[in-house]
Length: 436
Image (cartoon, rainbow, N blue to C red; front, side):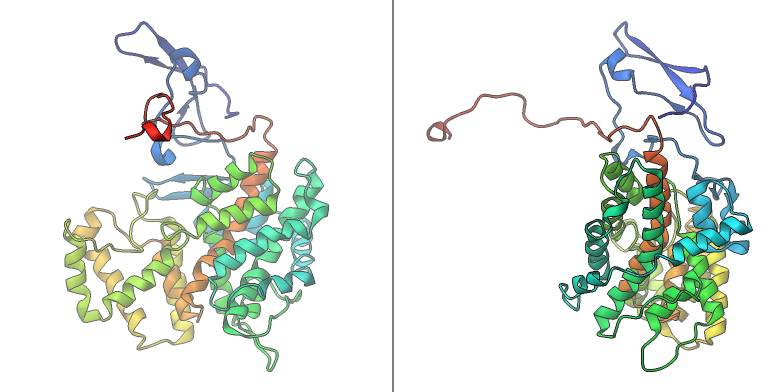
């Protein structure tokens, strides 16, 4: 880490041995301080053991701050509630990348920079034909994004500030096009090219839903809902996919390869596939009348039934993004006038029970952002297979911001976690004829 030393130290003494290490304590702007353990092996001959890195700071960052106990999420110091209410996704993208919200001129220049890069190299169209029609959109995203480094050679020098800027524009601008084309390919419809007269979320919805045979007009309520979904998923500190991007980037890999690695990590059902898992759970419940039986199974510690879309590993309070998503959910359902959808009726009833049942309230198992986003996307007609791909469109902004910050950190070094070896001790080779 490159954080400053507070002058305070933590003393670590090994029992039964006259060996002590004084570990500098590094404070953050807000949140807990961290003990700098980099010299602990040299002084004590031991490493720390932290599976999943739940208690380890792998870097210092100025981008995102989370207080899970208090339900706080800040981007560059701005509360997520204020950004989702008053800002746009591209404003938030500028903020994450550059540290401050843009003024009017900066905002216009950034919009133009993204808009000028929404088109894909025409030869990339042929990549889609190499996939089966039933390929998961995330498989397509992994392949096409990774292949971008073969087409955009002019922005691969990670040590060149201008190359990093162009790569950021290209990734943020082209991910919606790639994701939308992956969807169109899967349903056998023609690819829809991006339109530079539309906003970011509008353009994405247009590429997803339009067909050449007739005009398609993007509903402004749905466009605002999509923009808000993108904002709420733009960055979330050092989660699994972001850590993957940073680890890949620490080797000096090009940004397209790093983002492809992040997409692969996001694909996991425990990470980016959570909202897809919510709808799968609702489908398995089947009917509102089956909810009481389902709830009893969830409460049974011997049961393997899990409640998807409730609670969060980081937030031990209400997920601040969920409150915004809940309001957006009701706006979308009201705008679309959807009534009588069994899955959405199920979700509404499950939400009501979870918010009032003492079992869930006492354990702070509140509906999270995945619960509501899954309902919104289903109501908008987006298939569940596209949920994680849409998440990737949003999170690309956070990934490239985190990658850029890491590359520009003079203290950056290649990631190399240690391990506790629990295998066989050293032994000699035995010829095959002598082995029992």
